[in-house]
Amino acid sequence: MSDPDRARVLAASGVSRETAERLDLYVAQLRRWQPIKNLVGPATLTEVWSRHIDDALQLLDLAPEARTWLDLGSGAGIPGLILAIAGQERGIRVDLVESNARKCAFLTETARLTGAPARVRNARIEAVIGDYIGTDVVCARALAPMTQLLAWTEPLLKTGTTGLFPKGRDVQAELTQAGAQWTVVNDLVPSRTDSEARIVRVTALAAPSHR
Image (cartoon, rainbow, N blue to C red; front, top):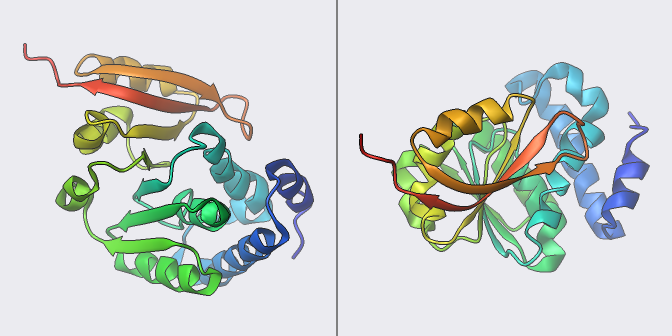
């Protein structure tokens, strides 16, 4: 199956031919495993390059100097495994934390096939987050509201890690709710894949207020 968006996404991202081939492997794996593991919304497979690949690749431009990444609730590896594949030539390494063992099997096998510099951890976020203090970037897509994401990632965001959290049209409401508990230094970056979506880039976090 060819995707009309593939050439456009690859041209816009400027990846090498070798990286494009590894991304093709990822897409083939996603389509192969989808009927068994239900990794993504079935309807999105027809737009996998614009809905998933490009959506992940845009994060690389928001932290160009970052070398160590942590992806929470990785699921189908979006964005974490895609970042590992595309960022390999930059020297990027990505840890993928996922509590579902079946999805970890997909991540592990696809990382092996693509040669991606990714380590898969079958664990709950709260059990391992402390291992990642000092990581350059933490990201999560379609995982939880901002308040919960901040609670999970507090040890990292308070010590210099940048948070990149793709969000939909309700982002402002989520930030307002989170602001009742946290002092968040952030900016909103327009998504290049959805005019109504934003990427929340968190650069500092203060402890919850005590009331």
